[in-house]
Amino acid sequence: MFDQVSTHYDRTNAVLSVGNAALWRMAATRAVAPQPGDRILDIAAGTGTSSVALTRTGAHVVAADFSAGMIKVGRERHAGNPLIEFVQADATALPFADNEFDAVTISFGLRNVVEPKKAIAEFYRVTRPGGRVVICEFSTPPFAPVRAAYFAYLNHVMPLVVKLASSNAEAYDYLGESIAAWPNQSTLSSWLRDAGYEAVAYRNLSLGIVALHRGVKPANAADTGAADTTS
Image (tube, rainbow, N blue to C red; front, side, top):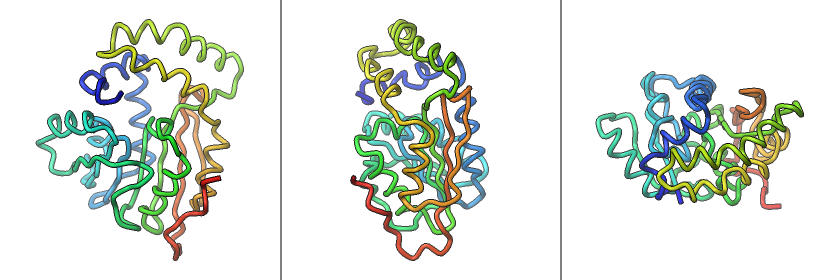
């Protein structure tokens, strides 16, 4: 599906979010706080739009995505940026060593993983002790009027917008359903804690339509494996 929408993916996201996608991306980048020399894993990086922002302070970014089509577009689009490396990868079986990255981040991709708890366990494994995780994802607005308006947009307005903006409107049919089925902020926070992350916190963006989750791998973590998250 993502191979089919890769060409106009970024444009469609900008339209569907009414321009907020760029603001959410900026917030995620600030939360990651990339430093010169950091090695950062950007999962579900798509065409690399979020990865570019992470390189601007001198960090090296591995942009990983399950979709070969997304990786192809990203490599072509950012061929001149030596700080980005594109890798096709499954979030639930990352092809990287234990403790390899200073930070692991994923924006609007965890919701698309079939086994999100298994993916978070992989995030923990490849994060170095003292390193950080940042997850930016659609969430549940805590205020009922906002929540009602938001789901009305997802169910009735967004399908019309997608037909105008996307190269493959049918591929977006799942979007509203996946957002509605996604767990709330507290549940995702508990998944991070179960994986082993500490100092877990979240911040709502756009009245809770999106939430920015953060955690830190303990500096004294001796076992790179996470707790059992298969149940």
